[in-house]
Each structure stands twice: as structure tokens, then as C-alpha cells.
Image (tube, rainbow, N blue to C red; front, side, top):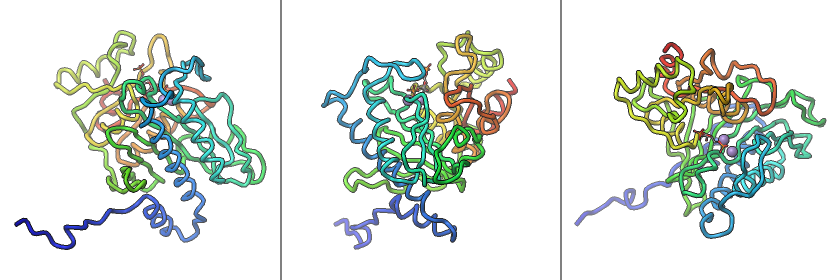
Amino acid sequence: MDTKTAQELALPVGVTLDRFIMHSQSAFPYATGELSQLLRDIALAGKIINREINRAGLVDIAGGNGTENVQGENQQKLDIVANIRFIRALKNGGEVCAILSEEDEDIIHTGNNHGKYVVAMDPLDGSSNIDVNVSIGTIFSIYRRVTPINGPASIDDFLQGGRKQVAAGYILYGSSTMLVYSTGDGVNGFTFDHSLGEFILSHKNICSPAKGSIYSVNEGHFHSYPAFVQNYIGQCKVKNLSARYIGSLVGDFHRNLLKGGIYLYPSTKKDPKGKLRLLYECYPLAFIIEQSGGKASDGFGCILDIIPTSFHQRSPVYIGSIEMVDAVVKA
Ligand code: AHG
Ligand code: MN
Ligand code: MN
């Protein structure tokens, strides 16, 4: 008979996100717990959105809504639902004085003027993949406000630059739901256990492999890319690398972060600044990749060094394993 020890019969559940956040906070004796609470609020919003996404095929929540967002892109119903869920969770949480969302032109004042933080977010990324059951995500970026506490937040709070992020991360709604974040002290990943309703630490101290064998780019636009990108894609083929492109930034980024690879969204003739948004797509993922040992470039310099000028500005992005990003900018 296959006899197990008592320990083997009841393996520990692992470290919950709440416990991890509490433990990390205790390393900073002067921490007030507000950032910890904000991270918990984001996790709660992620759980609620996860529930909505899981039911998408059953209730009338999938599909387009017949409206356009501030970027002139078609909104999916779930884009709107995720936006509302996030804004509500952050308003109720009380730590955030203002929010910038992909779905809204201007910043949203939460009414919590005592809040020390602002959040920029893409509530649902890859929304064209919703109806076909492919991975989608949420991306968030957190700054400590620079405007005085107890007054209203302003544009200055959001245009501090990527290096001023105090935390950033994403939630991936995939074959399992994961929260990956960093507060500037490495990157950790938590997998959602549906039965417990908890995120459990599953990927401790994630390190981006220095090189990889995957390149992720929409090759349909190849002829519209700058010459150095075309050269790099040519080099990938010569080296027999694998092309993997979901069309969900979070999913493509996450795979490459764990396995080693590069994600490219270059400028095109139609979109000379690329497609992805600096404040709530490029900056947070650049923060994560640098914290894990990888790199993010716009083809000229580090994404995190770009000086922002407007809420919804775009940037080309080359992000992932450090040697691959170095190779693309030299190609
Ligand atoms: P969003 O759904 O928030 O508008 O972002 C979609 C983004 C990103 O997730 C993805 O990698 C990229 O658009 C795909 O663009 P293409 O279809 O042009 O390849
Ligand atoms: Mn997006
Ligand atoms: Mn989006």
C-alpha cells in the first residue's frame, strides 16, 4: 500500500497574498500599510473580474457594446464592466485619490483626497480575445502622489515618469488566473485558488532568462515596420526561434517572462508611435521586466526613461529577455 506521512496527506496550502503583503510590509518599520491595502483592493477587483470573465459565455456580458473608448477603439461589454469594477474597488478602498483608465479620457477623482496614491490601469487588455476564450489581462501602475494630500489630484501625479512607479503588476486571466506584481524588490506571482478564493504564492522571485527562444510580434504588419525590426525578425528566423503571438499583451509578456523571449510592438506607417499606451501598458510591464532582470526599450532608450507628456500617449515597445532586447535595438 502507498502509505503517506501525515504531512504528505495534508500538504500546506502555501502563502496567501495577504500574508505575503503583510510580511513584506513588516520589512519596512515606517510603512503605514496604505500601499498594502491598495494591493489588496487590486487583488479583490481582480477576483471580481475573474468571476465576470468566467461567466461570460453564460450571461449577456460578452461581445461588443457598440461604443468606442477614448482611443476610438470598439469597447467590449467586459471592457466596461472591468473598468467599473476596478474604479469601484479603488474608490471603496480609500487609498487612491485618482485613477487613469484606458477607457476614460480624463482622470477619475475618487473623492478620497486623503489618499496618497494614484493608479493608472488598463482594466482589460486583449479584449478582442474575450469572445473566443483566449487569455486576457489587467495591467496596473501605482504612484505616490506629488500634489498635496487633502487636495485634488492633478495631471502631475500621473506624469511623473516610469521610474517613479512605486508598484506595478498585472492579472492574467488564463488557464489559471495569476497576479504578478512588484513593489521594487523583485517580482512575485500568485495563482488564484478558486476553492479558497485566495491568491497563493506560486512563482517566488521571478527572474527573466537572459535569452530565450521565443519572439512575439504581429508579423502581418512586417512590411510596415522599421528596417531594424525587419532585420531582427530575419535574425530570429535564421536562428530558428519560435514565433508565439496571442494578441493579448499580458499573455504574451507573461509567457516570455517565464520562458525567455521578446515581445515587440514597433511603430508602423499607420501608427508611427506604435499601438501600446505608455502609462498603463508599457511603463508597468517595463517596471516588472526590469525588476526581474530583463529590459524594455522603445528602440532608442529604456521605456522607463521616457518623459511622459499626456495621459494616453503611445510608444513602440521591445520588452523581454535582456540579450534579445539588446539585439533588436542593434539590428
Ligand atoms: P486592448 O485590448 O487593451 O486595446 O489592447 C490590445 C493590445 C495588446 O493586448 C495586444 O498585444 C495588441 O493590442 C495586439 O494588437 P494587434 O492586433 O495589432 O497585433
Ligand atoms: Mn491594452
Ligand atoms: Mn484594454
